[in-house]
Length: 238
Image (cartoon, rainbow, N blue to C red; front, top):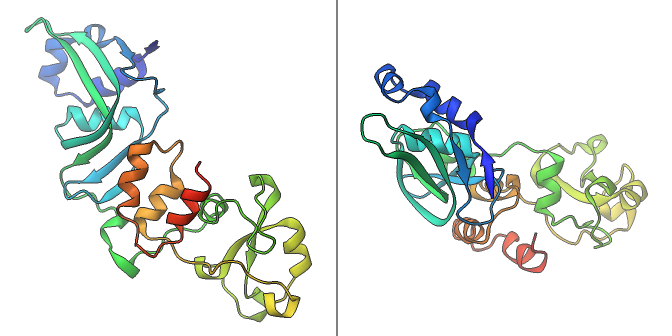
C-alpha cells in the first residue's frame, strides 16, 4: 500500500535548518509513506516523557517532526509505518523514519500530565464521559450508541450539584427524563456505579481513537489498580 506523503514532508522541510534545505532540496524530499504493517497514517502514536509517563496522542506529522529534531529518546511498541523522503545529494542515501506506536521524548513539555495525583483534573466532555462509563446507562445498565446517551447530574443543579466528573454519569435519554431534577434516591432509581475523576493516564486512554493492543497494555500499567476502567475495558473492549 502506497500513500502520498508530500504534505508531511513539506512540513518537515519547513522545520529544517537553511543549510539542510540547501543540501537536500524540497523536490528531493518528496516521497511516499509505505506501511510496514496495515496501519493507516491516521493511526495515533502514544507520546510519553523520557521516564515513560504518558503525555498525549500525536499524529504522524508531529511524530516525524519529533524524530527529525532529535527529541525521540527511545521507542517501544510495534512499528506502524516507515516514512520515506528524498535522496540526499551528498550521501546518496534516502531519508527513512520508522514510526513506532509508542515514542518517548526528551525535554519538559509543560504538559498537565506532569501534575501527578489529585493535582490534575481533566476537562469534562460527553465523548470522554461516555467512554469512561463504557457507553452504559448507569441506571438501567444497557449499552447505547453515542447519540442515544446523555449526561446526567447525580445531584441536580437545583440542589447544589456541580458539573464535575464526580457528579456526572452516562444515562440513556429515557432514564434521564425519568429521573428529572431529582437525586437517584428521590426518583427511586439505583446508581449502578460511583462516578470518578480520571487520572491523566486514564484520560489519555479516553481521548484515544483506535487504541492498539500494545498502547492499551502500556496505558493500563499506568492506571490505578482500583480503577473501574480495568474491568470495563475487559468486559467491553473497543
